[in-house]
Length: 153
Image 1 (spheres, rainbow, N blue to C red):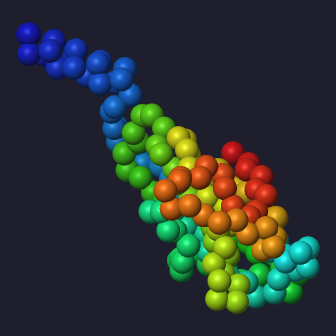
Image 2 (tube, rainbow, N blue to C red; image 1 turned 135 degrees about the vertical axis):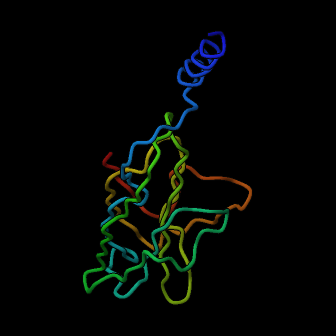
């Protein structure tokens, strides 16, 4: 009887602390739906590559499986990405995502976002390549880049 009471007590402690995973098949947003415009000094940039991805290190600019090019009006669009999880973990995850813009063989940090919680469902961005800022490898930027971004959670 004490064995069951101990397991029940351990279950309650783990559940209250938020460190428990339970089977509950679900999908969650990992990459937001994104649309925006890329300009240079407010003139639309045609054919710029936009790479949207989860950030796995300091230097996140580069090729991505979520890539597109700007159209004749400088606009781009991403559908976003959800992934399937079998277990649900209580508590908020650390989400880190961003996008880069490649134009004339040069990468620009469009936006970097990091925080506790889930990726936003949708973002809109206005990016001007003339606003380029120097990135410091020793600093993690929360919401930093050449783009003005609106998040829709």
